[in-house]
Image (cartoon, rainbow, N blue to C red; front, side, top):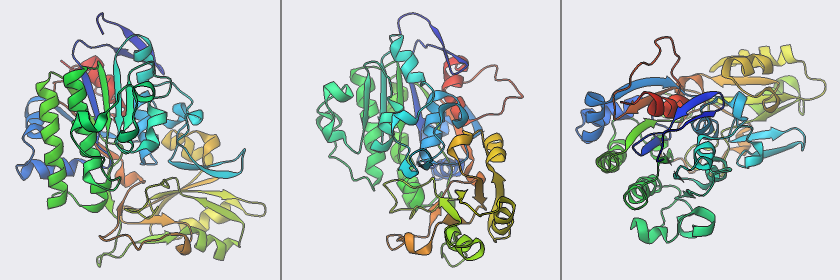
Length: 410
């Protein structure tokens, strides 16, 4: 933006910058991925960020899933403000389980909406198309597209056309590292050719679901990312990097998934039809996690007793915490009207399913890795600039990344 402006978005002030700002959300990235890649010597730029920039650790939003955290990052606020509390939820008014991809569920404006309406040039690139409508909601002009459907992008709908030619890559598979690489490669090309004031790059966690930190597959992914971050830095961008959530193995010592099939358990203990288990991790892309995560909500039907069901769930091995709706809304800053009567979080090595018959794990070629719980809450907050004057008592969150970059980067 040509002149300095400070805009208020959801109760926080953001100052426009003289240099382009690139914020990267690395899906499923716990700090150990970066640490191991640096130690392996494959990420010289990330090593430089550690030495010359700022490296912090923040908490993501629980449930530690993609949609609620991406929307927290781009609104600078928790789900209690923006309303997106999962990838999937029970719409009580319609009595229907639905994806939370429609912008009609969004209750707050984004940083992109505010700055684009103030005249800033904004570019938003996401790996999966499920986020595009939410992230680009009410943006004025600018660029917004997904790598998944890059071949369908038009100037009228997405602000850019001929993407495959521009980026120099074929359309990637949705289940590939190349889907995230396309996001980075497109970001570099746009910064070179159109120089947006603000750019948001959001990847997919396909690799993190498959590979643990320090493994060859993981290190190759972070080496690829490092290559593009180097170019973004060389083009003069201020870079802020965070994650939507971490990732953990969810298996026993033999590599067998540790799964609580909660609907099966409750049908046996409380009676068929007394409860309804909803898994907010559910999205169209379940091959790499089988729709299994460490967070679930339970709705009680007529005749079910809240205290009794809560005790039954608490007694299940692998359950970390059981909260009432009000308790979960307060502890995790969630919209109370969009979660179940009970919220269940499982321990680090355990995931929650509905019924065994509803989960197809045949496509899992490697031991199950997933997320969703408190155990995946710690994520990196990294910047290629020194930050100044961060209040010592401030609880750092992944959704501070824009605020820190725009107000505190030197």
